[in-house]
Image 1 (cartoon, rainbow, N blue to C red):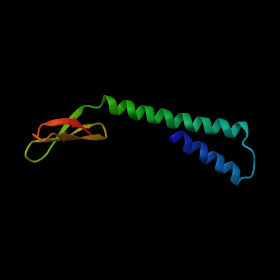
Image 2 (image 1 turned 180 degrees about the vertical axis):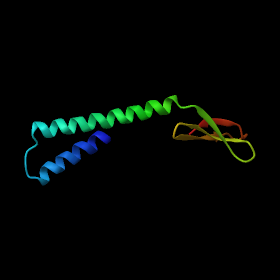
Image 3 (image 1 turned 90 degrees about the vertical axis):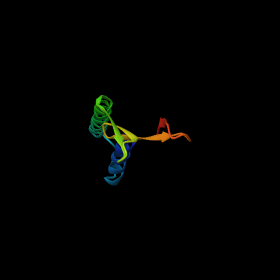
Image 4 (image 1 turned 45 degrees about the vertical axis):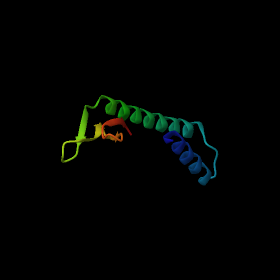
Length: 86
C-alpha cells in the first residue's frame, strides 16, 4: 500500500510537469519507498518487542490484550470464558 502510494504520487507529478521520468526521478522515488518500508519495518519490530498488557474492565474481567499500539479484544464463549482474541 505505502509503496503504491509513493509510485502513484511520483507518476502523477511527472504527468503534471508533462515530462518523462528521468533516472534521478526514479532514484528519488526508490529512496523514498525504501525509507518508508524501513520505517514501517522498524515500527513492526518495535510493536512485536513491546510488553503485553492485559486490559481489564472495572470489575477486573479481562476485556483486551495490548501489545505496543495494538489492542486485541477478548472474545468470550457462551459460558463467559475467554475463547480467542480478535
